[in-house]
Every structure is written in C-alpha cells, then in structure tokens.
Length: 236
Image (cartoon, rainbow, N blue to C red; front, side, top):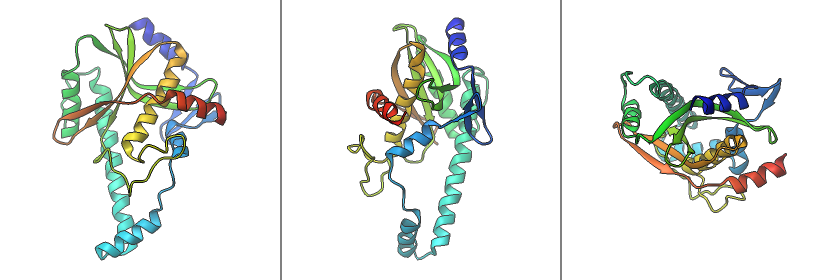
C-alpha cells in the first residue's frame, strides 16, 4: 500500500490548502470547493423570512431567533471540527481516548472494521486537473478482496434527513429532497470524480453518521458521477 499511497500523494502534490481561509489553490489559481459547487443545486434558504415566522410562532423577536440559529450553528461546527480531528488521528493512533459519544462512535467504527478493509489516507485533499475544483475526503479505504477503494466521510449532524416543507434540489436532482443526506451523496460522488483521475476504482461511497450515544449509522450512497460529470463539462 505504500506505493499506492505515494502515487495518490504525488498525483495531487500541486494542491495547496489554506486552512484559515478554507481555500484551495494550484499554482496561485484559487479553486472552488466541492461545498461551493453544491450550492448550484440548492435554492437559497430564506433566512429572514423563516426567522420571522418562527419568531411569531414562538413569541420571540426575529433577532433572538437568528442568534439561536447562529449559536447552534457555531456549536455544531466546533463539535464537528473536534470530532473530525479525533477521527483523523485515531485512524493511525488507536490508543487515543475519546472524550465524547461521537468520538466513542469513531472508536466503534474502527473496532468493527473487517480485516480485509485497510486505511490508506486520512484527510485526502484532491483537485481536478480539467474541471478545476477541489475537496477533502475524510478517509480513503482499500478493500483487499476486490482491490478497489472506498471513500468515507464522517458526519456529526443532529438530523441527517431534515427537510424544510418538502423542498427539493435543483435540476438535475429535482427529484431529491433538499436534505443534508442528499447533499452528502452528491459530495461523495464529486470526491469519486476527483479520485478516479488516478485510474483507481471506487467501489463505494459511505457516510458514517456518528451519534452522541457512542454508536454510528453507516450508509452506502448512490453513484451520481454521471450527472455530475455532465454538470462539470457544461460548467467548464
């Protein structure tokens, strides 16, 4: 696996990442992230309007509702960073002690990993040399039985399937509900397009939903690479 890992790292070696600004660039060219591309498939959330409805319903001011949302968003973001940092290091340092339920879920995930599935890279940063976008996959695994790869992303959402008033995504995914889960399905297919430039094969794209009670749910996501390849070609 050392040669494989070296091939992967060498293929993407021109990519630089500014963590503070969360910005990818290659030779000073700033590349849009997968998260940014996903916005093309979502209708804007009418924050001010919905906050007004919620304030009226709950007997609060709109400013109070907006602050609640901001505080909750920040807490979720901070928690997600902490858990992802633990997960990244635990992949190689199995003696780390979890400090919360979601970190315990990370430990359980790795303890239950079959022997024929082996870790290859954590926090794999990739970019596309034709479509010029970039992204970071949490984990790349290798299946020794099939000689194929698996992309894994950890998620710490409170509700992976939440949806506001049956809202849908935009074309060509208008048949999908606008939910975190469906956004993540597209995200992982974007990652697959990035990775398969190296002519290695992805056999699955998995979401590992880490729970506060120390358990996890794992989902194999749908392959949307054909639709996204078409989108990227038109965009390019």
